[in-house]
Image (cartoon, rainbow, N blue to C red; front, side, top):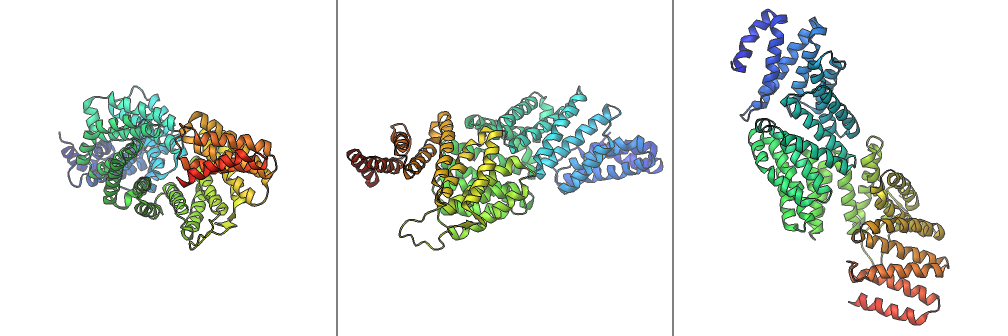
Length: 560
């Protein structure tokens, strides 16, 4: 019998004898709410069925709460399961209510409802940005599903969705390797399901493929990520047909991942094309996808800057900031940081301080709620303040709006630097991936302390910075050679000023050797300043002939 016909027959029976026929009608309505259709109005009909089930189960539970609480929880889960049919806050409240009804499940039926409710709540918390709470809940959800084993086909798919939430939260919290492992498991489990189940749950497969591709790209496996995106192309087309809005959003996400992969593989034109297309598709989806649009605009802007299209890149970053406001605090912080750094590089001083003011405010607001994300962003913001306060304008520079010398965004350089170093030390101690961030903070604080007149402390900070960057250079010479060269150069200069010329000389010699090595990969111009620093110290030591020879080499490079 058709489900629609069955519901029509059960409604009058349930009105006359609700306790007997009401549970059967509620079950049929919940089943109806799960049936996805590509026809116009399909989502509205699913939502209506779920709402009717909730209202009916509330009446049943009011009469016999112990008997029908599980039914009400199942109906609430079904209501939230109709995507984009209600506000996020309302969905979270309904799922918490559902969990309360089945917190101590008396049987497997209630256990499955509990797992489904926890899983959907984890999804919604993740969408809201509550990554830590979402991760904790998703891990409990996985354990709940495991307790309900053996799982039926639909239940296995819901467990896979839980794995995707775990992977997303791990990625958000800065754990890329863990996220990759979890997402790989989710993809492998999805591929192990029957073709019928994969067709019914196409959106899970699209999510799994895109998320895994994103993790592969983040860990340097761009070609594998592209191959996976290509393999999932047909599934994305199916999803666009059945659920157009969701399908377009997934396509935009895939395009953005592909853009980043193409950039990594040295294909800038393709990267720009894919990122631009992602932005265009997300614009079509309206306010509901403002956070994703802001991320796409930021990525597109960064790619434009890398390709030398400065004006267009800055425009994209500025738009990303505007779109992210009141939509996504995390994306707003990322966009502000990128735009502020670009404005500093362009010497657009008049527009930098308001950006840093807002960036610091956003980071401080959220740093306690999500420290894994906002502490590194706060350090980055403070190092940008250091850049502004330590900047020395070249002679003859008449650019309007020159930066103030003492305070930026209410902070002087030394204060900002000390806070940045303290935060970065804690981050690097907890996770070595933040050592480069600590190196930047130390390097910036050195300049601020040196400007304040404490050359000895500045030298001590640089010793720590050099030691840190040596470790990073040993692991990745190409990625950290330039940073090590800069730190060595400044350390040599501080030692020279302190009169410790015998210590300054080998530091400068190492700096020059790194800068002009045949395999350095650095432009020849980067050796000019190290050579001049070395010549200065040689001259102070009375080695005039060597100093003159080194100076001539530096001048020749500068002329070229």
